[in-house]
Length: 137
Image (cartoon, rainbow, N blue to C red; front, side, top):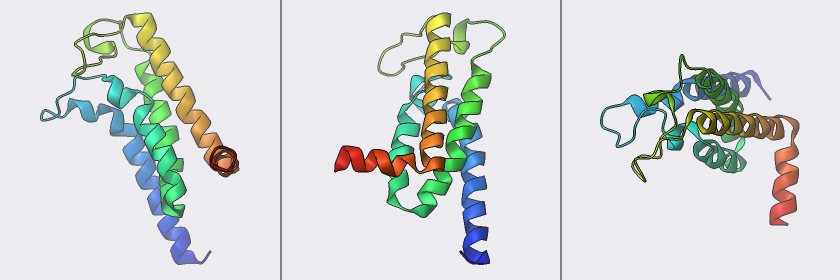
């Protein structure tokens, strides 16, 4: 890998890390039809999609290697609000107006963070390629 590729790889990684650390709070944007601490932005859905897309090329993999740990760190911070009331609880809006209770929200965030950490591990160690071969043949 020459210096240009290394530079681009570093930029892609840092970009992924920057976006991953703030992505969960995209639900604070007014035009989006979701509430803060949405299951759609604080759950496993976006990381799973990105993890699957990381097989699409080297740049996706480096982006995911930055995004996934930052996303997990953000979720870990969200696991410890001042109190588990109102917007601190995970919401399934607009599918339903239901918000999870405090313990269920904590477990949902913890599971999502653990999954993002595991996905980072599989990408960093090359296990992702082995899993893909095992499942896809």
